[in-house]
Length: 264
Length: 341
Image 1 (cartoon, rainbow over the protein chains, first blue to last red):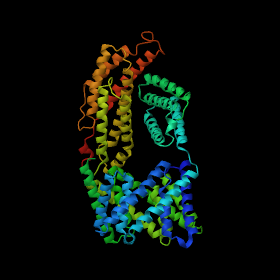
Image 2 (image 1 turned 180 degrees about the vertical axis):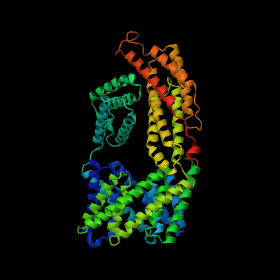
Image 3 (image 1 turned 180 degrees about the horizontal axis):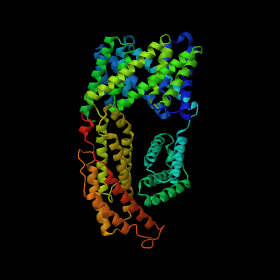
């Protein structure tokens, strides 16, 4: 197993999750006799599940957790009225999977639903709690997830559009660096970087900031960037005597990009 | 995956989950629930995806155990919130250092469970949870390999075949592709999806130890077919300008499209016959390109002239396309690689 020193972004993320856990446990301590450690455990459990690499991923995971737990809990609660032995785990799993797919739930949501089948049936104490356990397992982690997402937005938060602009700048920098070097089969790096940029752009296009990317200048900007990347990639692939064609094409596209207004 | 294998897979997983929980209960294994959960996590994905998920889970759990040991050992005098802060912080940092992409969540759960759910016997909980997780992952990978095995390499090849077949159609009708940009963006998205699945093939190969290098083959196919896709996109745009082509070049291009398309269509199938026509075609194309598109300055449009730039770009893409098509590797036999076991 290779050891990678954590990046500054990862260190910030670790501090955030630690702080969110500190707040969650602090609330439990302040609540005193009103709360028990199991409640605090569920809140911190939610915190540990939040603060993923991007705010969108955190939100998606939170949604999957809440919807999956409620859905799985509902299905399994009804099931254990009829069967409450080990058979219920298998049947519960199959029911959650088949019904969930029919309802269009994604894999992460279904996984959370399936977990309810395991926990509700496998642990007698939880089975006795029934619906209360489902609410426990939904409500307390939800508070933890919300706490995590609040901390995510309070410290070192980078708005979506700014992330896109940084991604564009990094891509331009990468293209310029490659132009200053001899072609060396580095097309896959550029392809990966551009794929990440496009995936971020598609997130912005689905957000309330989509209008910023809809202007003619922004669209033109994207076209020049795409052209620069295509020439940059081709320059890494073509026979060396023909590489200057794509180098010129890439430089020209980057020049045009530099003189185009609009948002990345 | 079609509906029938999906249903069979759900039935397999449901049955195995039930059996594993029953066995854990019968044997009275300490923290045995985590054994069943680890098996479930592995079985939810295909073999390659399961190996990745298992690795994330095991390393994440170990990092969580390490974080708890440090936190409980060193920071015992600190108040509980500070201990939770330290535990979660360390679990994430260790997870990142170990290169985890999601396993740090499990690490955080080990911390939360140890410090808040089992504060009096955290060592028993964290230790047995780790042991059961490792055991569950090993069992899960074994079962995923042996019982109605879903191989990443099979589904990857299936997707790759569909992608290259569409690419073959695009190559064959370069000068007449309806909704050209839309088609190429779709092809690019599918290529990116195939690229994202490569780690699953690598993980799968690490446990199948197949003699045939499916990963290397997949990487080579992606590399050369990506080049073909980019060339097709550029060429189809260039052909919109209806450049003047010599009969020899036009003939070589037509041949390149036909043979290339055939080659792309055989990629995902068991046999990819070597075509002796390739070397002849490559030579003819090179001569035609050099004679009509790469003529010395003065013989055609001036350097810097848009028409000359287009000609040079056309030459570059034709040679690159021919080169990439010739380098597409043959498919390693599925049976030899163990993918159908």
